[in-house]
Length: 150
Image (cartoon, rainbow, N blue to C red; front, side, top):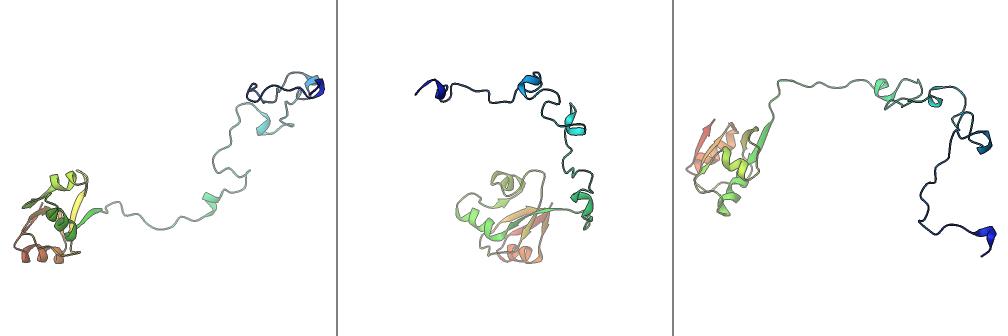
């Protein structure tokens, strides 16, 4: 080690930034490393998201596609095998309604519930929901239960 290769200890210095606009002698005076003219040379410049230098941006070149029906109703589906699993685990006894769906995280309180026909149901249940598929309703009634539409 000698005077030509002295340097601060690792982590002792923090500021590694260029000191811009501190006179011509610094080498970063004048335009302060921003070049001449143009939006990027000016204060307050921020590029818009998706800006491509004046070229028509990708999100405007690509055509719109499809259709969104504003009157669509999204149902939260609950299958029969899910209900049977809850019965087997002793979570529900005889009635299934909105409080049961919310408590077991099958749906939230504002969702519309539809009972779907996947799986088998052997338990006698009184199931309350907004909608039922034909197979689900038949399976509930075949097991001796009752399907109640809200």
